[in-house]
Image (spheres, rainbow, N blue to C red):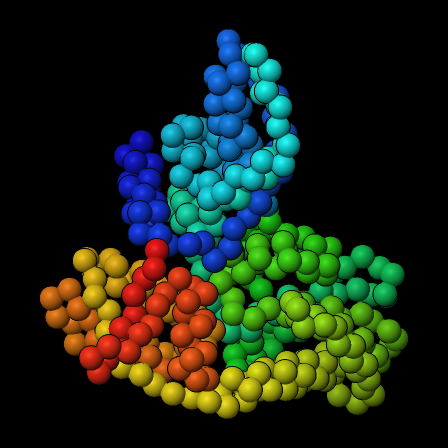
Length: 348
């Protein structure tokens, strides 16, 4: 019980300081409740809806046993996970309440709770590029990922370290957490919900699904998909060298070319500013760092002098100062030039 109490103190801290989840998971819930009056019915129905929504989302991320453990949380504890409730339709009677709701779960808080209670594995070093290697013997065969028979994944793992210049490419880990959340067919579709779940669990910066399809004795077809990046098909044939070795080389070359183009575009303008942030507690500064590090155009944050309630730091970024100001505003941060310094403030 002490552990749960500690978890929710920590969660209350994040809520109080306005930290927004990078990923929010949604669940549709239908409720129908009767009680002594409409007010009581609605109150009980909302509690039930919150519980259903949280458990629906948890089922995508962890095992059935862990979901059952989460179901033991009290209504008061559970409400901390709810970030938004949208009423799609509702109807009240003298003694009842009926509604269809869309409920959003705070992904960061849910992940934090699951990690602290050993419900999902901890990702210590997020991948720069994460590969999800699917394999099929023919285009019409079922796809395999972690199952036996994925010789494409085995070839990638046997290769060991895979790099293209400074670009590190990792193969998705076979873990109970990933297996409980996503199967091979879901990976192949790679829709928004699957991509968000995978990023939530792995914290990978970029994710590619690479489906290798055997198309003959000495031929493979690589189907490479990146979220919001379209699809690329590469025919790989080899008579003399190892077919999978050549396929890895083709895959790495293609991914490197895509990422290098982005790096060049993003580095067309590079700049650095010295910024100042005033805080009430050190936790405020730690939260700001998390926000800044999630901003795509910010390359590096270097902390300088720390004074009473004040920290000086350098911000390396790509683009113009106007562009940086606009992007920070989208992240509920303000950037202003005052008295010779750039001042960053949290608008939450």
